[in-house]
Image: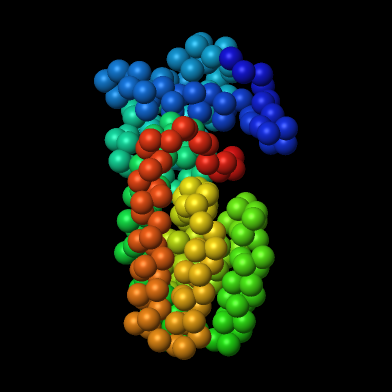
Length: 246
């Protein structure tokens, strides 16, 4: 059993309930939970040598991620994996890499559905102030092509500016909620050709500056679709953790 607090990268500390929850999720994913019955408070306390308070907090974490249901009477059952909260960065960190790779490909399908239409909506409603911020972001991208981590941050903000410019609060929250998966996805795609990515963003920007929804839709669609082959290769790569925060 790990120590009560575990340093992550020399900076972050994990509480004991978080450590136990992470182990249980990995066990569930590996199919080592029989008949869909998760450990009870007492089971957790006895197996991991922790207090009932820690065991209770562990189950609360699992329930908050939609991993388990805690029925009246304290019976704990595992929910179907399709119903887990895959927008949680905490859950993403605990999943095996092959599961994360699959989620990134599913996220890419969502981006293909949403982002071209968001760009078209933004082209109609975009303000000069937003265009100024997008131009500044584009210039920063061009200067950061040798620094993929810094590029990632500006890339994400560029897309979120477009999302906000579309002026749809529900779509904005959907995109924001998926930000950690989006960051993990861009870490994969940004390992390739950053100058080409900057050129893609320049085409999107120009379509928005022209306030041309059809051109903005097409430019965004080409950009997102162009990343699909890079994500498809992740299954054959060495495992890489995505760095999502606790």
